Amino acid sequence: MMARPLRITFPGAFYHVTSRGNERKNIYKSKRDRQKFLEYLGEAHERYGAIIHAYCLMTNHYHLLIETPDANLPQIMKHVNSS
Image (cartoon, helix red, strand yellow):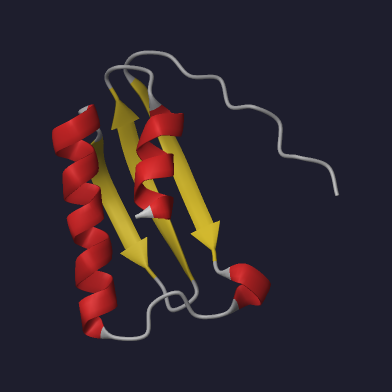
C-alpha cells in the first residue's frame, strides 16, 4: 500500500480532516470516549492554536474542519490521534 501524499500546510489554512477506525471498527465505545476525544481537541487548541470550526463524531470515524494559524496540522493530528 502506498502512503498518502503529504499535505500542503500554510498559516491560516482550512482542512477537512477525517480518520476512520482500523478495519472500520468503532473508535468510540461510550459517551466518555467521545467526551475524551473532545477534550483532546481542546488540548490541540490550547497547545497548537488549532481552531476547530466544526466536527462530526460517527461511531467508526470522525470529520473535523480545522483552521491552522501556524501551519502545524501534522503536530495537531499527531496529538489528537495518539492521545
